[in-house]
Image (tube, rainbow, N blue to C red; front, top):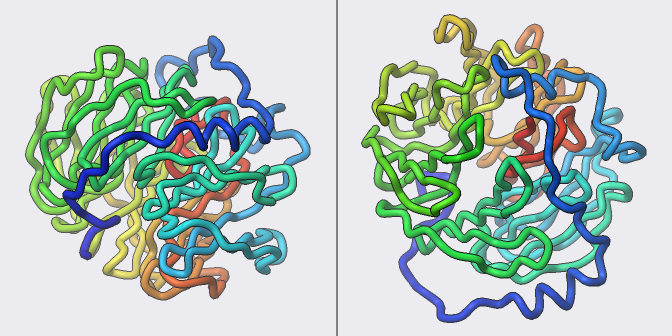
Length: 367
């Protein structure tokens, strides 16, 4: 498939949360959702500049967790030595590794197995499995009260209790290929990409209703809020660039050509730049968020897909989806520092922990 995940229209009846409850009781409970001090009003990523880490992750080793979507495994890499230090089987077709809202655990999203593999980030080891229908992607509302499972096969967002994983409600997305999203600065709405149909859909979070949409064409994939909270950037693999979306008017106000197969979007540690991976072009484009211009393109080869930034901001770790590799890129020079061979079709790797008060999900979107 040309896109990020797999499409399909089959619908299964029922929900499977009873098994989830039995398994999750064996694991440490999630911290309760709490009031979080807002970030600086002019920068939603103010708490992520680091390099200091949250007290919540004290004692956790910084590791890179790589889900191999075809091998059905996870490789764990020590970023100090660039060596694989652990390797274990998980469920079928793991696409992303997602940090929990409270940073206490990691979830491997096994789409075809309808399950989450739970990892204790203190040890890097698997602690259990939770039954969840079609977890292609996973996000958490900014207040931590709700987990949103992107059930791509069913074109819906499932709103769940983040502790018991009980289903609270679903939002049907009117276009095919729902797979990535991001939240507004206040968390009241989200924009979700519909990769196979070329639409961006706006969902009101409290009411769980679709309230707007904009057609951008191509294959829209990753979605990222601008630091000032006023715009959304959307990588478009079919148009080979990045759309700029006004979320109030729900209009595309600009488009930045980057490279073939624009796919993942990552805000730099100083929050001034946006890294756009060009999966089909073997490059990473650097966007200046103040001028909204592409200022550099790093040609590293391979198939850079999804990744994460080191706590000090000096390295960008990114999976090479079609080359069965992980790339380590120097963010100062754009030079490829290391290439690490991993399993088949590595996808949404998580470099964890990173600076931030809490996780919004995906491979580690922090605020």
